[in-house]
Length: 191
DNA sequence: TAGTAGATCCTCT
DNA sequence: GAGGATCTACTAG
Image 1 (cartoon, rainbow, N blue to C red):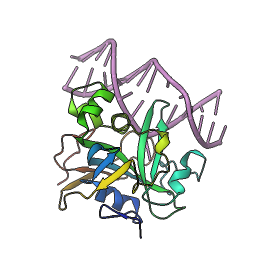
Image 2 (image 1 turned 90 degrees about the vertical axis):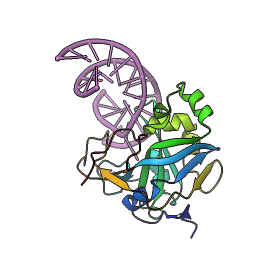
Image 3 (image 1 turned 30 degrees about the horizontal axis):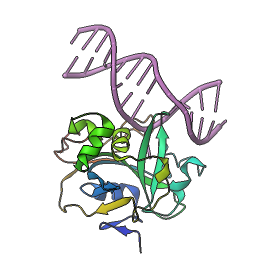
Image 4 (image 1 turned 45 degrees about the horizontal axis):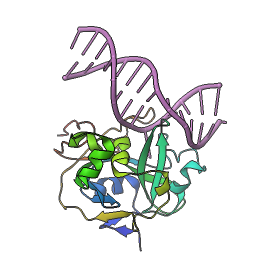
């Protein structure tokens, strides 16, 4: 149905969507770039906001797939998730890093840096650079200001343990574009 | 260069 | 009242 966006089936399990999102270009109001790093979160995942059931904050995560779930982290930063699976499931993919391609000047101004790596190499940074706030929580990824463009197929995707969480750290649900210098932390090259 | 701690505020218990 | 899917600056080696 409409869960297909940029060639991605958002009704698939979060770890599948997280892998497929690598290489896809995401824009917010024309500003953004290519996704180079994601993390998958699922309802049955102790590290996930959805683990303890629906609340006012994570309501969007239990909404329809291919929608945005934006939350505040550590009271300071915003983090952007894409909802997947089906409505009511409570699964999502955290966008951790992108390669800046569009509206770079705008991002540099928002982030107050000329270093492209510092623009979007982390969940909080990319939200600041792209102007993501809670105003976008629950918005459809198929409608303005969001825009998703299909990525290059056949990209090499690497995986590893997730970052910045205190539970289920051994689950390899972090995905990244192999060889990209724009990931927040380098992946340990898997053989 | 790598490691550590503080900032800051919303949400849940 | 406590903790968190982070970022940044500061310190030690």
